Image 1 (cartoon, helix red, strand yellow):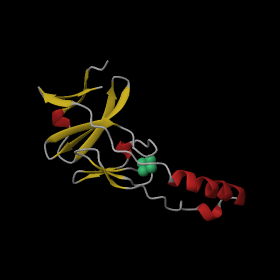
Image 2 (cartoon, helix red, strand yellow; image 1 turned 90 degrees about the horizontal axis):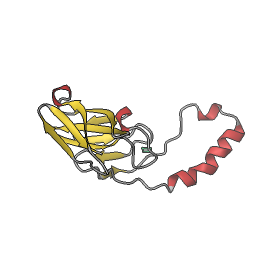
Image 3 (cartoon, protein in one colour; image 1 turned 60 degrees about the vertical axis):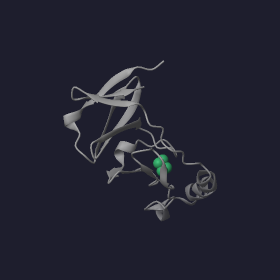
Image 4 (cartoon, protein in one colour; image 1 turned 135 degrees about the horizontal axis):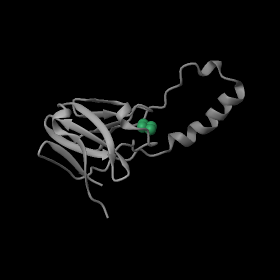
Length: 131
Ligand code: FES
């Protein structure tokens, strides 16, 4: 059973900013979209990269790992992951490149799921999330 946890002070997060913090044993992402607050578990719906290391602009969250894009207001997937070649790949040993080539089709089939919004409330300048 979950409970409410304070994650951040409301005045500490301006419009179009995000932060993360621990709540109920989880790493929780909090975003401020034009004064409307939203919270998610701080993990990408693709392969669990921490979303706070990505970008948040104009209501859109972009994952730092493969650039999947999420609507910060709903958690909906707005752009699928992009599996681009890694810089410097050509310098790796042939065995390593072969292993990566075998994993490519597997990674390509991993579904990117929407983020599940967490209940959130702002009161007394405190942003609280139910986890
Ligand atoms: S882990 Fe986020 S797009 Fe792959």
